Image 1 (cartoon, rainbow, N blue to C red):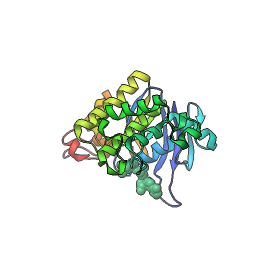
Image 2: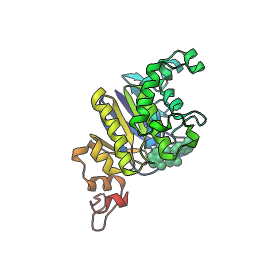
Image 3: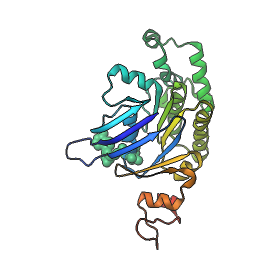
Image 4: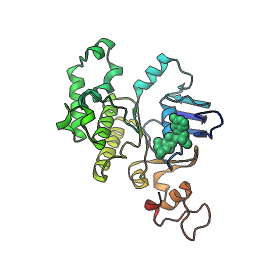
Length: 264
Ligand SMILES: Nc1ncnc2c1ncn2[C@@H]1O[C@H](COP(=O)(O)OP(=O)(O)OP(=O)(O)O)[C@@H](O)[C@H]1O
Ligand SMILES: [Mg+2]
């Protein structure tokens, strides 16, 4: 479904690479958690997959077709299939929560409907249902600028859910949520994966959530993949080592399990 071949990206001349020779193949229906310390390159990787960042070297392919170097028309087609939950949400401030969720349907509608705000009844229903599932039924008509951070984040998740593409990329999609709500949101995304085979690639800062909800763990550090393994084979000690955290008594590169949650 998604293929990265030797992807390197530098944001500027002479800057260290944000991604450094990343090669990954992600199959249809996989649930991949992307971990790694702040600045490791998680957002850059997700943006490269969505064609929002053009790698300096290497190629990204979606369903065997290059995203890198795709024409604007091809990119539009690719982006219909790839929903992105941005780290900064990218909501339209004056729009209501419902209006923002309906943005997820833009790719499916003729331009005149979008411009006139004439969304089919089925789309409105879909958007309302998504908001309700995310605990925001009472906020559908509220402008997002009046919502809390966690409520906005859930609007961004709802927008991705209604898009109905083959892939959902999420950049720390539960970072602003309390633990119970974070689990509920991940459960919703996983349910979509199980029911419709939607491929999920989500970056997270909570390793325990990654181990609980995902079947594959990829850890980035300084732009490189330092671990890529089935979640059931990953121990907290492996994660500590991948993050470069040394626990007392452990030899270099062999992070211990103790205190991993705090260490990360
Ligand atoms: N727009 C930008 N311009 C210049 N450098 C950038 C830009 N975005 C990211 N970088 C740099 O690229 C590197 C990787 O950043 P990226 O945002 O991909 O990391 P991340 O793993 O998502 O971090 P975080 O967990 O803090 O979100 C960092 O060193 C960062 O400073
Ligand atoms: Mg990021």
